[in-house]
Amino acid sequence: MDFTLNIFTLNCWGIPVVSKNRKERMEAISKYLQTSSHNIVCLQEVWSENDYLFFKDSLKIVLPYSHYFYSGVMGSGLCVFSKWLIQDVFFHQWPLNGYIHKIHHGDWFGGKGVGLCRVRCNDRLINIYCTHLHAEYHEDDMYLAHRVLQAYSTAEFVNLTTSPADVSILAGDLNTAPGDLSFRIITQLPQLLDPFDMKCERSNPAIQNPSGTCDAANNSYSNQKLIKDAPEGKRIDHILFHVNSALETEIINFGNPLEDRVPGHPFSYSDHNAVTLEMRLKSVNDSKIGQRQYSKNSSFDATVAQAIEVCQEATENIKRSKKLFLTSGGLLFMFLLGTVGFWPNNVIYDVIKIILTGLCFYYLLMGTLWNKIEMNSLKAGLSALENFSRTKLESAKE
Image 1: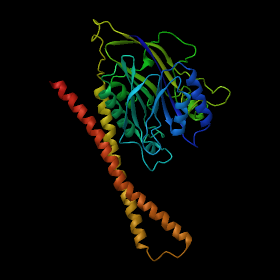
Image 2: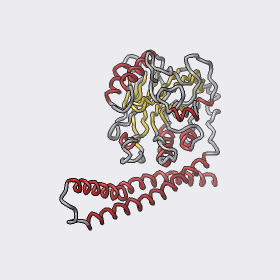
Image 3: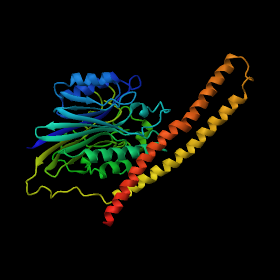
Image 4: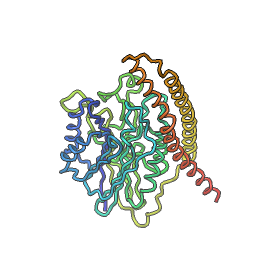
C-alpha cells in the first residue's frame, strides 16, 4: 500500500523568561500546524511542559497522538506529534551533555538525548527519532568531543533500532552541517539519506528553497555580525531518512515551510528556520526486493578514525584540566587553612572567606568527582569507537 509522509521539524527556542516573544511564537507555531498537512511533527527546545501541553491540546484534532520526552532537570525539550497511533516510545540519554557549571549554556540541565516514537500507519511501521545535539557556542568549539560522541551514540541507536521498521526518520537540530564530522557519523553509520541531495518531484511555491536554518538573513533573531559573513546561514536542522528494500521513495517537497515573519508581527517563528519533507513511499515489485541496497560509504573508516582522534585529544584536555582544578583548589585550601585566626572580625572579610571557600570547593569538586564522570563518559564513547574500528578491520581480513 502506497502512503505519504509529511514531516515537519523546528527548534522552537522555548526557554521560559529568556526567549523573546515566546508566548506569541508558540501560538503562531500551533496555528500553522493546525492548518498544515504535516502528519509527523518533531519539535525541539520546548523547555516548558506547559508549552507542550498547549501544543497537545491545540493540535489534538489534526495530530491526536503525541509524546514528550522527560529528562534531566528541565526536560529534554523534545516532543513528537503524530497523525497515527504511537505504539512504542523510548528515550536514550547521552552520558556526555555539556558541563553543569556552564549554567548559561544549559545543555547539561536538559538531560539531552535521542527520543524514539514507533508509529503504525496501516500495516507499516515508522520509527521517528527526535533529537537535539550540543551546540558549538564558541569558535574554539569546546564541546566538539561531546557532540561527536552524541552523534555516534545517536547513529548507533538508530542503527540498532531501525529494524523492524519500514521507514526510519531522524529529525531535529543536529547542530552540525553537511560535511562536518558529526553529520558524517550520523548519516554514514545507519546510512541515513539527506533529501537535500535528492531531486524533488515538483516545485511548490509555498516551499522555499532549502537553505540555512540558523543565523540566516531571513530570520529576525539572527546575529547581524554572522549574517554579513554568511547571509544564507548554516544548515544544521535536518530531516534524514532510511527505508527498507521493500519500498521506494519519491521526494515530493523539501524545504523551509514557514514565512520569514509571523503574520502580523515583526519577528520570526523561532531563532531557527523550520524544515519540512514530504515523501511518497511505494511498494517495490517482489522481483526487485533486495536488489536496491544502501551502499556502505568507504569513507566511514576515515570518519571513525577522525572521531577517535577528537576523543583522544579531549581525553588529554581533561587530564590537564584535572591538574589545573586540583592545583587551584589545593592552593586555596592551604591559604584558607593557613590564615585561620588572622581574618579581622568584619562582615566584608566574612563575605570574602565565603567566596574563597566556595571557589575552593568548586575547584576540588571539578577536579575529582566531575572530572571522573566526564572521563568515564568519554572513555565509554572512545572504547565503543575503537571497538567498531577494530571489528571492521577484523571483518576485512576474513
